[in-house]
Amino acid sequence: MQKPIIKKPGWLRGINLCVGLCTPVLLFGLTVSISGCGGASAEQIELLRAEIFSLKQDQRQLNHQITALDSLIRQKVQALDNFKADFGTDVRSMSQRMAVIEQRVADTEGRLLRLQGRMSAANLAPPGGGQAQPQKISATEIFDIAYKDFNSSNHQLAIEGFSDFIERFPDNPMAAEAYFYIGGSYQALKKYEKAIESYKAIAERFPDSPQHPDALVRIGDCLIKLGEKSRAEFYYQSVIQRFPDSDATAHARDRLNQ
Image (cartoon, rainbow, N blue to C red; front, side, top):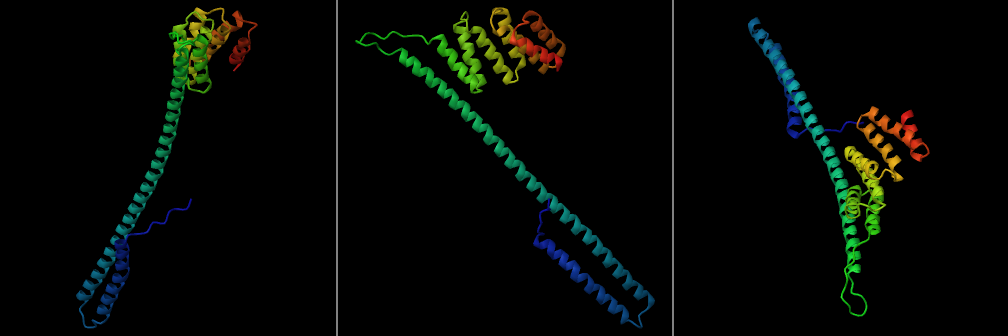
């Protein structure tokens, strides 16, 4: 990549010009003085030569200082360019995070509006002017709202929705499935210990549910992520032995062969 052209400040260019012009003039004057001093003593000539040598030394030192200063300016300009680039990256990252937050807020507001709409519809007065009889939201409605959040990758909202479902309807046939989606949401959030807890709840509370074999495979997957391969293999083997005809068995064998 082509290096940026750094324009030297005016005072620095002035120093270069002064050194470039004045030194030769001084040296020329001293040389003329030496050549014009035919009757000058050897001591005077040596003094003039020493002065010329001293001027040359000063010129070299000044040139070194100018080079060092020029290098320092280039470093400062490069640091400023790097700062601008990093600042731009930070701004873009913050904008992306803000967009994610705004989307989550919009999803939450949509969920609240759906709930409020259903609650309002349930509390409408019946025809004939009778008194309104409040109605509870059904288990299926709560489950469906949480499931939509899960499919939309709003995993935290899905966890909250399915947890609310389980709290309200702990003995509902869909409770095992709710635990399964809670575990899947925690997996997506890389909270593997929490996911394992949800999957174990299926094995302990709903051992006859269709989600039981898959839950055991998922426990093994989470243990792999946690670096506990031997424990993961135990769960894979358990699926193969206990549920040989399930689809989960094929997945368990694949995991063991990896």
